[in-house]
Amino acid sequence: MSYPYKIGSKEAYQAAWKRSVEDPEGFWADVAGNFDWKKRWDKVLDWNFTEPNVKWFVGGKLNVTENCLDRHLVERGDEAAIIWEPNNPKEQYRTLSYTELHAEVCRFANVLKNNGVRKGDRVCIYMGMVPELAIAVLACARIGAIHSVIFGGFSAKSIADRLVDAQAEYIVTADGAYRGAKDIPLKSVIDDALDQVDIVKKVIVLLRTKTPVSMIKNRDVWWADEMARADAACPAEVMDAEDPLFILYTSGSTGKPKGVVHSSGGYMVYAAYSFVNVFQYEPAQIHFCTADIGWITGHSYIVYGPLCAGATVMMFEGIPTWPDAGRFWDIVDKHKVNILYTAPTAIRSLMAYGTEWVDKHDLSSLRILGSVGEPINEEAWHWFDKHVGKGKCPIVDTWWQTETGGIMISNLAGVTPAKPSFATLPLPGVQPVLMDEKGNEIEGNDVSGNLCIKFPWPSIIRTTYGDHERCRANYFAAYPNYYFTGDGCYMDVDGNYRITGRVDDVLNVSGHRIGTAEVENAINMHEGVVESAVVGYPHDLKGQGIYAYVIHDNTHDEELTRQDILQTVARIIGPIAKPDKIQFVKGLPKTRSGKIMRRILRKIAEGDMSNMGDTTTLLDPQVVDDIKEGKL
Ligand code: WTA
Image (cartoon, rainbow, N blue to C red; front, side, top):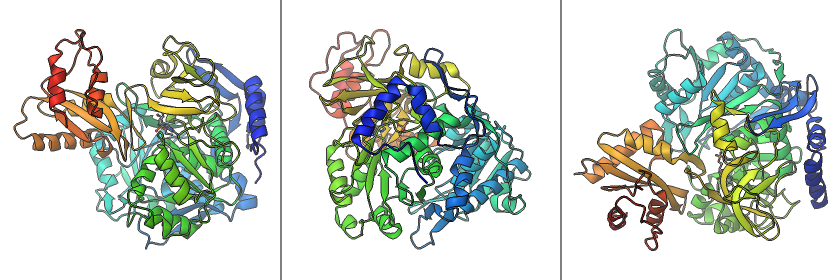
C-alpha cells in the first residue's frame, strides 16, 4: 500500500502546511481521494463556528469498514491486521489477518442485526482489550450502528448514565476482563447498571474469564452461540460522510461527561492521514499503541487510523507492570514491534523500576516512539529516548483531544525536529492560535496564551450527543469563531508549541480526563458530606493527583470516613476518580457571592503556602489559615 498523502521531508511539510491554509479544500480533497468512496462528495467543506455546523465531504457516501478491511483483502489479505498479546504471557497470542478480521467483523455484524440492531442505533461496548472489542467496534460501523465504547474501569452508575444519555438499547460485553493480577467482572457491573436502566433490549456476552455470570432469559445471549448461527457475508451499509460513526464520553469542566460525536468520512480521513504522517508509517511495520480502546487514542490509533492504512497493530490486554515491570519490553522483543505509542504516566511508572527491566530485552526492532495524553516532563522524555529508543528513535509528542479525533500538534517522526516537552508544530491542515484574556489572537513568538483552533479540520467534534447547545457553549463560546481547546500553551521563539495543561476545571490524572465537578458531585453523595471542593496538584507518577477538601458533619473516625468516601467515588464514577488526598475542613474559601476560590485551594494542595494573593473578597479569610494548618 502506498500513501500519496505522506509528507516525507521538512520542505514538503512546510509546503503542505502552507497549501492547507491557502487552499484547505483542495488540500483535503487530495488526501480524501486516496480512500474508497461509494460516491464522491459534492462539496469538500461547509462550516461555521457559531452554531457550530461543520460538514466535510458533503454528499460523499462510504463505509468506513470497507476502507479498514475490504480494500486490503486482495493485496494484503494474509497479512496481520491485529496481533493480540494476552494479559498472561503464558497464554498463546493470536494473530488475525485482514481476511480473518474481515470475516469476523462481517459475521458479528450479522449477530448485531439478528439481535435487532439497525442503522443509527446506539450500541454500548464494555469489554477488556480482546480482539473481539475491535471486532464489535467495526461490526457496528459495518451496519451503520453508532458505537459508544466505555472504558472497563467505569462503574455501573457511570455506565447507566451513559446508556440513558445515548439511549443505547444494545450492549456488547464479556463475562470479565483480565488486567494484571485482577479479574474484573464486567458482566456483573453491567447487570448493576441495568438494575437502574430499563431501555436495554439485548446484551451480547463474550466468554473470556469464565467468571460466573447471570444470564437473563430473552435479554442476554452468548457471543459464540450467536456467531455460530450468523451468516458470513454482510454487505457494508452505505453511510453519508456526515453520519455519526461513534460517541465517546469525556469529562468537561461542568456537569456529567458529554458524548462527543464523530462523523464517518472526516474522522476516517483524518485518523488515517495523521497516523501515516506522525508515525511515518511504512507498510508491514508493527505499531503498538498501549492505550485502551475505551479512550480516543485507542479508537484512532489502534482501530481506525492504522487499519485504514492497512497497518499491523499490536493489541495488548494487560498492564505494563504485570507479571513484572518488563512486560512492555517483553512484548516489543517477542513481536518485534517497530512503533511504540504510549503515555507519560506509563513511562514515569516504569522509570521508577529502574533500567534493568528494559536492558534485559532486545528492543532493536523499535524505530519510532510516541507520547500522548499529558505533558511529558523532560526527565521522562530523556529516559524514553535513552533507555527505550537507545538514542536512535525519533520521539513524537502528540497533542490532541477526544474532541479533535486525531493528532493535531506533533512533530512528524524523523521529518520535523523534536524538542523535549514540546508537541512542536501543527499537522498540515491544523491552524492553532494563542489567545489573550481579551479574546485577541496573540501575534509573534515566545508568547503564552489559551490554545484555540481557527479553522475546521476533518475530524473535529460535530456535536455532543443529544445536546448541541452544550457543544457550542463548551467549545465555541469562549472565543467567538474559534474552537477553544481548554488548554494553556506556550510558543517558543521558533514557533514550537508546548502545551502547559488545562486552564479549566478538568484534571488529567494518569492521562485520564476527569472533571473536578464530577468528583465533587460523587463526594457530595456520600452520607454526612456537607460540601466539597476538588483541585489537582502535581503528582510524580500520575502527572496530576486529585486533592479533595471535604466538609463532613461527623469525622470522629477520620480514616474510616476517608475510606468510605473513596468507596463512594469508586461506585459513582470508577476507581480512576478516587481522590489521592482528602482533607477534612470546617469551611471552604468562598467569596461573598458564594463562589469557591479554587486558586487558593490549588496553592495549598501544591504545598505553596506563601502568597495567597488577594483574599479580601473572601467572606471569611480565617478559613484559609485553618485549611493551611490542616494540610496533608
Ligand atoms: C492533554 C487524549 C500535553 C491536554 C488524546 C488535552 C496533552 C487532554 C497531550 C485531552 C500532549 C493530550 N501534551 N498535553 N502531547 N496530549 N494532552 O481527550 O490537556 O483524553 O486537552 O485525549 O489531554 O485528553 P483526551
